[in-house]
Amino acid sequence: MGVFFIVGAGFLYPYIDSGGFFVRLLFLLLEPAGWFLGWTGLDQFFYTIRNKQPDFEFYKKMDSSEISFFSY
Image (tube, rainbow, N blue to C red; front, top):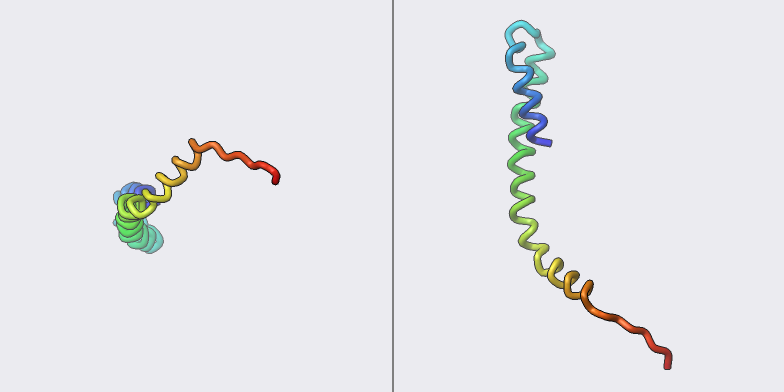
């Protein structure tokens, strides 16, 4: 999402001087929002995955295990 906001702000940049208030406001909102969402997304990608690694290993072991149910 952050990358799309930054790209959108980049497309608006040439029109800041001649675009008027709305274009300036949209650029002003998109640029910081893009940076924030970009860095927050990268933070989630790199640090949250480390916390989930034990769960992935457990699920991988469970996937390869053979489970049988027997009646008494």
